[in-house]
Image (cartoon, rainbow, N blue to C red):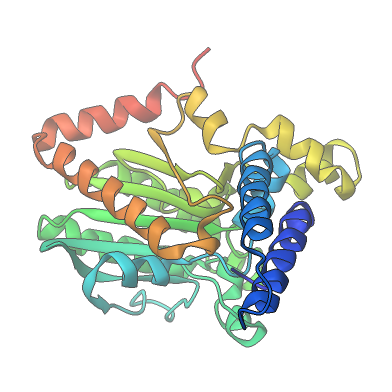
Length: 316
């Protein structure tokens, strides 16, 4: 378990500490505390279910941002083999906030692309905290063009607070690069699978978010704006972020009910950071299932279904 604890996790942490203390006391065999330990462990499991099965949207946003949560490269390493990263957009430079390359998943060739955050301050600065620049989106589209040319399915992992908002990014055509990706992804002739693994913020997420199947992990979020940004606009108070998270309907369950995504990917109790391997296996299972479904659909039908999927969004 991570040493970083969210506020609503504190009662769980305290109970875990008590259990560990009792186990330590009983380790030499001089004291029999087996019954007490079993009682506390049963209480711990009950408490975990009570807390994690009734999370508010804001609490899920906090889990989505957890610094120990698995990132794109973690999932690639845990679910795929033979990953070969490809760099650069052939126009400006290589954006470290967007990674991509070819890999295999149980022998199946795929293109994997995704936002990548850092684990410490130095790496986060290098990767712009997962906020891609125009060259990142151009790199992603360049790789998708290669996959399309060779008939290789595409899997994208979304995990970004939003596209990079700096002056340089705007000067180099941030909005244009995202809009271009939206159009071109709609026309790809190969299956495209999109998975929101953490934060799914605004156009920064949509820049690699057009697909035949769109999935959101249980404790991830997908939204037109961050809860803090929404609160600042609606209430002129960023402290209203929990209220904004509620009204934005940004959780996987809300998005599924609204018909905006295809499925919610379950996570280990407490979040993907508590058991990354299990979270990765859940993702691998959904990718293989989607590939099996989509590869059997003819190209013309695939394009038609993709168009209809996005065309009906927002209809009242």
